[in-house]
Figure (cartoon, rainbow, N blue to C red):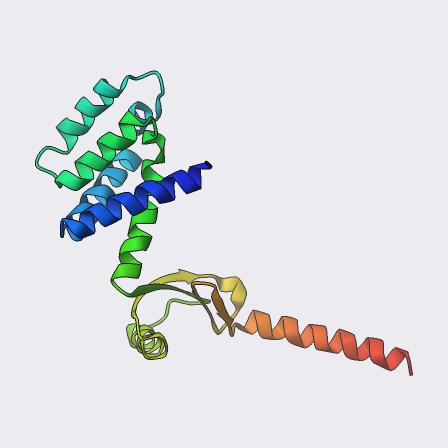
Amino acid sequence: MGDSKITNVYARALFESARDANTLDATAADLASFAGAMEASPELTAVMYNPRIDTDTKKKVVAQLTEGGDRIFVNGINLLIDKRHSDLLFDLSEQFQKLLKKEQNVVEVEVTSAVELPEETMAGIRRRIEEATGKKVEIMTTVREDIIGGLILRFGDVIVDSSLQAKLEQLRSRLSQANIGSEQL
């Protein structure tokens, strides 16, 4: 089984356990916090990723860092350690968050613009997408000057590119096709 399949299996199992125990928010928060601690500490990441460090040592480190933490989260991390998959923690955290957002009916939308957009514009975009999808919208913004103007919206598999750059490319393509057609006459 590939790493992504293994990650999906563990993320789904952890998610369902947390949902059954009614601790989804606590499990998600502790998992995100632990992944953040690993990101901030190369030493912690090295311990968790190093196959030469035995499972008992890894579990002791986890126990010290998660004292008082969510039981489902701690059990999930310990299971990963036992199965020698502690190197999947970042991916597990990411996949768990995706499952949580799906459960909570939240869609992530990436808005790319040439300049930072005013809050009222962002609120309007959020409202329109919520009305169209029937879901709560979480917006992430990116500023890219090369799109010149307009917006690029990306959510799920849908991309709406109304940037000036895209429109210029379409115009350029039409003009070059028109030139080709006129040469044949």
